[in-house]
Each structure stands twice: as C-alpha cells, then as structure tokens.
Image 1 (cartoon, rainbow, N blue to C red):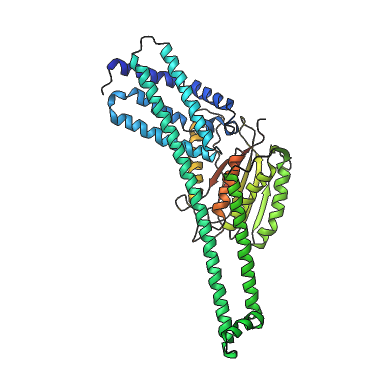
Image 2: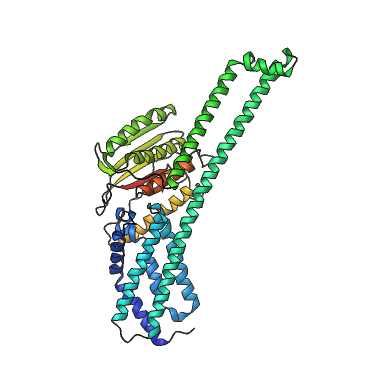
Length: 442
C-alpha cells in the first residue's frame, strides 16, 4: 500500500528525532534495567557491553521509518538486519551470563523507552497525520517482537548445543565401557587359550583362570584398566549430577567476603602434582591479596574445570593461571584467565558449545572496538591472549569431560553474573577468560 507523501515525510522526521535522542533512549533503558530487581547481571557489565548490538537494531528501525515509500524490499531488508543483530545480541547476553528471562525483560524495557521517545515526538507535533503514530507504534512492536523471538531462538539453539554435547559425553562413556568389555573378554579368551592344553573341561579352565591361571602382568594391567574406567565414570556421573542441579536451579549463590588471591594460590598448588604427573607445568600469577564478595566454592569450581580441561588438552608445555583486578573503571570486576599450550582449534572445527563461545567473543570484541572508536571509555577491546602451542594436533577435538565441564563452567558463570570468553585457533593455545564482579548489590 502506498504511503501518502506527507506521512512519509513525518515518519522520516520521527526517524531523525529518534536518532537525535539515541543517547537519551539508551541511558533511560540502562536506568530502567538497573531498577529492575529481576535483572541483576546488567550491573556487572560496561556500558559498551550493555548496549551491544542495540544501536545497530535502532539504526535498522529508523531506516525502516525513513524508507517506507520504497516498498516491501526495503522493509524486508531492514527486518533482516534487525533479526541478525537481535540474534547476535542474544548470543552476547548468553555469553555475558544472562538467563533467558533477564534478556526478555531487557527487551521489554527497551520497547517502553523507545515508545516514550515516540510519544514525546507526537506530543510536540499536533499537526501529525493520524496514521503516522499508528505506523510507528506498529513498526516498534514488530522490532521488539523480532528481538524477543531471535534472542529466544538463539538461547534455545545454545541449550540444544549443550544437550548435544552431553549426549556425546555419554556416548563416549558407553563406548569406553564397550571397549573395556571387549578388552576384558579378549584377555580372558587368551588366558583360557593358554590353559586349554592342560585342562579338559571349560568350567575347570574358568576356575583355574580365576584362581591361578592368569599371569600377574595381565592381572595387573586388567586391574589398572578397571580402576581408571571406574574413576572416569564416577567423575562423569558427578559432573552430570552437578550440571543437573545447576540447570534445575537448586544451586544458589552463597556470597561471602574472601581473598580470591589466596584461594587461587592454594588451588594452583593443589593442581601442580597432577600437572607434574603428566610432564606439564602449571604456572600461576596474580596479586597476593584480592578481596571480593562472591561464592568461593563456585569460583574454585570454575577454575578447576577450566584447568582440568586445559591439562586434558595439552600434551607438551603446560597451563598458566592468572587473576587480576579488571580494567573497567565503571564496574568493579576481577578477571580469571586459564591458558594452555595445547593444539587449539579453529572456530569451524570446535565442539558446538566452544564454537558458540568463540563466535560470541569475536563479535563482542568487534562491538567494543566500534564503541571505543565512538569515544566510549567503558569499552574493553583487549582480547584474551593465547600461549604458543607446544602440542601436536588432535585427531578428535572433543576430549572426555570437555563438553560437560564447559557446560558447568557456563552455568556457574550465569549464577555468578560472569562473562566467559574463549580465544583459540589451530596451532595456537587456548585461553578462557572469565570476568566476574567483585561484589553484588544487596
């Protein structure tokens, strides 16, 4: 349907007005979210991280208002840009530790803030055509509906990716059991074959194998294999139970004041013997004292899972653990970083959950670069650094425990309002960086 000329001009004026009011809209949105007691994560991120892809979404909305007379193709192009930016926004909110409800409530606050700006424009323009405000409100509803749908779709995709990773872990555990059973049967078959010449009845052979017939080296090898398999399965089941509690919301944050510098030093000291058994180093560096208010057990669990994954991925070299106070002046933060000299992986060959984290990290860095270029001093553009790889490339990029361990880390980060970044590439080491608040609003 053709839009009358006067209506097109007034919609273009509205678009220009919204562009001029952009800073006011974004500030009102942040303040509305800060007042919402059900959105706690927003207070732990910088202004650049909070705004994220929303300026691009508003650009597309304003373009839609300005160019309605060019027909369906222009409208479809603007809608596609809105959807793409909304999906990336949903990915970043997931990376920053938001749950889905928090993200949806943010979209609601944004809707109201833009609507307030549209109403201010209308109140100052008594000469507006009747359909102009109606068209603008309908376009805004479509914008926010797209944003909610795309953000929700991205969260759902990420949840499916995590579930797929857990299925792979269980399949690997089952395969290990089946392999163990085949090896055990083969050992017994070989032992029975060796004894067959000296016994006449199969039942007697089995009794002899169980009592005296198996060589001690074979018995020891079998016992060690059995012990390792039992320990591996026990760890896997423990991780699955921990993840189930986190996903069910049974684990709550228990805030206490503690020295995270001391906790990290003690943790690294306890992990060094494991690294040494594998011929790897485990270096640590950070302030001797760093007082924060958080959940010490969950902070330690994040560090433990990341270090265990790093040790499993590394054949030569080792792991470096660092902690420091954050550089963002607008939010009190501290940063935990775990680096390894493993073979790394490209974004294309990474497991699904790791690939999503890598994609979110890359996109977030691009957003912050644009924010810094626009003069936003709260932007953090320093990417996580990687160590040179010292390990040969792996034939399989999914190590045992990596999928579930990383899912647990991600859930713990959500519980602690922390963001999780991943930097890696084939032939380079892998770095995980966790940015956590130094405290929480009472």
